[in-house]
Image 1 (cartoon, rainbow, N blue to C red):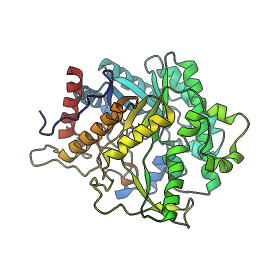
Image 2 (image 1 turned 30 degrees about the horizontal axis):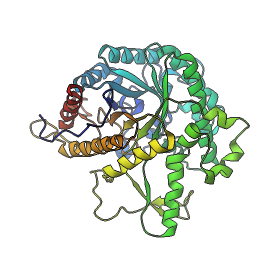
Image 3 (image 1 turned 180 degrees about the horizontal axis):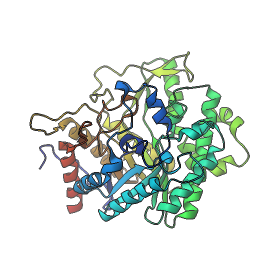
Image 4 (image 1 turned 120 degrees about the vertical axis):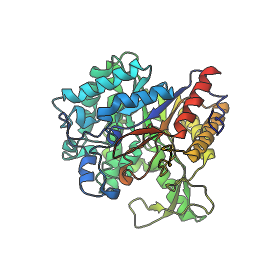
Length: 445
């Protein structure tokens, strides 16, 4: 038994799903093998902009070590695994001829998961846009709706006999708000941001229709990053900046996708990019709401920035993770309840986790007790949201493995398993054992 008590999960459903999440660029590596094309993140890494000049060229080498990683999941006892397909691995140019070797890799992964009794949850897009499409305008080009629908159709045809859970996008607010493709940091003008938001929403709707038509029994959603945006001072200007950022961060994707309207205060800005019938194309029936949540963000006014905001100081005394993110389980509970009230869909928490700088001790063990305490507190907050009536169906930890954490490279570690990036050895941390016990306890109750 782990030294830390297990979380209270008494209010969760008997069929509640426990899982782990990863993404293709963050773990796969093999970026130039078997016909894979370049992604925008390959190009961005080549620019030297990532901390320590890290790249995704090897990452966790999941491409070659996926069987070992499926074995870790089986040892955890998770019922489901959320992963993403690398669009440039299966369609090197983004459109046109498919890459059989890339498709075959995901065949092998899916078959290994099913053999281990783990349900595959396939996310079509976790930020690694094919560079060939970026050079054609990327998400600023309305043709991206067709590109993405064709890619979704390929995934449906190839994997839909074994995969029933599909997510269209992971965190569309992140790759639109914080970079042209979150890998090419030209923030551009506000009208470009609005055009991109609208095109991604259209692509979501098109993919939902393709998946629904092509996969019998498909269960479809989109994964949204939702964090409270709080003013960093009592000033009216900071409050207005926080509300503005919250609209772009939290509302501009789930509102049109789930309730059929953009937030009222931005409709005038979006209208120039809309064509007749667009909202009906976006607001397609989905089966669940994917929620990623980490912590509140604090906001101050900056009149010189594109949207008039900047990130401000956190209140004195705020508990922080080692990487500086606030620890606030109550914000997690409130976020779940607000999603339930606003959208009325079953909720799956598909990312929640604790970033740190773990290293093995002299015995070779990784004793991440602070991560265990974080997970316990957040799972109990989730349990409290369920007890208040929120329709919670699952919780997936970010992440199975330490991995490439975008601009931070390999310096930040979120995994339940430690990865030695020299040997690529996986070492289950103390949190790995704790989570396995929590899952087992739930099955036994």
